[in-house]
Length: 166
Image 1 (cartoon, rainbow, N blue to C red):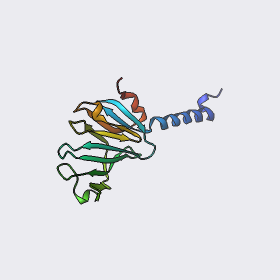
Image 2 (image 1 turned 90 degrees about the vertical axis):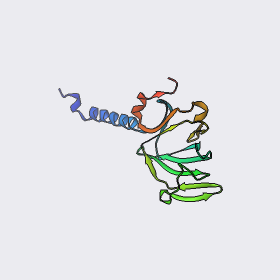
Image 3 (image 1 turned 30 degrees about the vertical axis):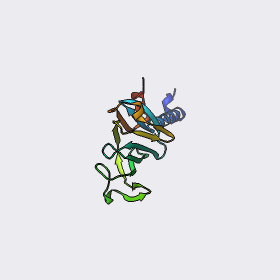
Image 4 (image 1 turned 135 degrees about the vertical axis):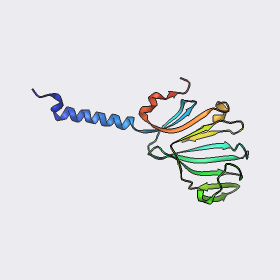
């Protein structure tokens, strides 16, 4: 009597199931955590653009940062747009391509890479996150000082991340 694992079709079926399961569980997912609870989960199939809008805490002028999640899970800062020079705002030509658009200063091609980003809501900063078609005015929902983490994790790790309010 031949053992089942020595036959080619059961082994091929099990291997196919294992590969399919691995491809699902290893898919990268962009996650936004609020104080450790999951607010946003978005599968990263190709580059995933998102933006962070806020009022600069010193200059009191709007800032827009355009980023994208790469297929490998890296977060890349693509450009920054702001309306005044000052502390904490980019100004070196070596940091990207600097130009004016109307009344805004724009730094394109910044090409800064991050594994994770940690933000905090602040008094008067109006921290807002846009992912795809969804715009989330974080400052309206969370008190100043609330920690916001942006990261990419494999899908299997989502089991360990609590959905918001659970």
